[in-house]
Length: 191
Length: 181
Image 1 (cartoon, each protein chain N blue to C red):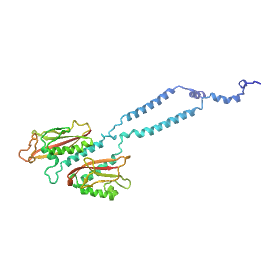
Image 2 (image 1 turned 90 degrees about the vertical axis):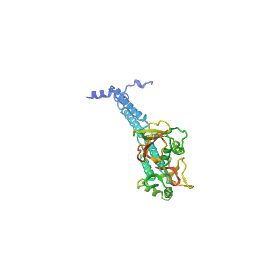
Image 3 (image 1 turned 30 degrees about the vertical axis):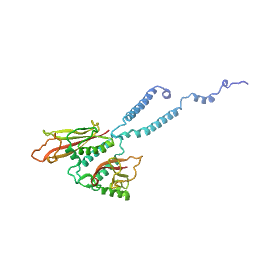
């Protein structure tokens, strides 16, 4: 009995397994820490692609379309509607000069509200064609949007009395005052 | 008289204590030190690493952000805020804005309570400003309309919501900034 105990104390076998165990444990922990640290950009990291930034962009876009589509007391049309009625269907690329005057007014507002704060925008107009299918034309085009872009839309009814300039938008109802419906698509993304 | 001590024979009783030098027992205290060091290193590692490990996965500004959103929504869309009529969002009245600015100067805590930013336990801060699209403070007939509340801190998280509003009286598009912290 006494012999066995002293054997156990003097025994130096099996020590390598213990060391290996400790080393493995340390390596595992370092690996886990590394993996977690190696992904510093999660959806919740404070950055310009944070979901709250995108939410703010969406709010701003919706707000601006509402404000632009507001009819001032002494006017017949809102700023946006007047621009769309006068627009001949030309695609304005980048920062090229816009015409006529009402379109320039709207593009100036967009430039000041968005470009001044590092946000790029595209404005597209969708309408129903003769086959009653949606067709889209570009109005202001600043290039292909990034993957985390925001799209806000606003619908606008057009009547015969509005005398729309764009000839490619057809009159859907010859017998009534209803002319067509426009879907204004504003795409926003941070540059 | 040149006696060397090595040649002197010692009795068995005298030599017994010398045996301890060759003993390998009692070294368990070294293991103990090693164990303690490993434990402490692990402990420090946990404190150092674990606290910052999940920071990228946690958002700490959700609460104030939703509060800023709510205040901004009330101001821009409700007649309890600045809106001109209950049916038209984002069209605000300059008179209401001036009124709110005065109210914030006179009774800042009352305004906080009105917008649900203060209770018995917690109190948030609110800074409101109405700016033109170029960033300058909006002025109506030479007077600043809305720019009130404490200066936002540099060290704390501040949530900001901006709303685009139209002022009928002046026919101008302005931006309403709401900051909560």
